[in-house]
Image (cartoon, rainbow, N blue to C red):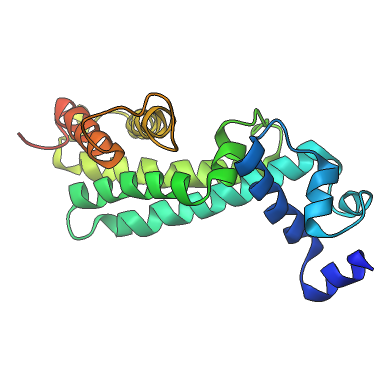
Length: 204
């Protein structure tokens, strides 16, 4: 039986998450169905309900796992600001672009599916952990300034996040706005440097 085969070879819950991420990559976050995810995982249409309340619950788990991986990638990229804070900070931008390119199904579930992050405690915690890495990086970048001149770290983190997301949405993943004389990596790096320099976080 398909169910027995799936359980024998691995975890059904994770198989459904992986199948859903692949479906989202192919059809977008709004088009996938629970029955198709079950078919891809090799189980009956009723099997997903053993682990998920419904379609949205499964979608939220894809997004949660995406945020966990995303945050870990950002943390590894920043590496406590080594060897220099700016170098490490810019590495995070590349990690952002790499995540969007390498895990598009998870990326779309996180940012383009309309899931309610605030409505799911585990998903909210994973999202906040990822943002916390950016906030801590912004705090390290601001250490060169006197305390009374440091911009709010969360504001800086949110601006960099928005800039990174904009580059992905407009100039990566085959988007129609992707006609540019520079690569997405170069665009993000130059934009981040201009922004950080404007705040006085890096020198001329």
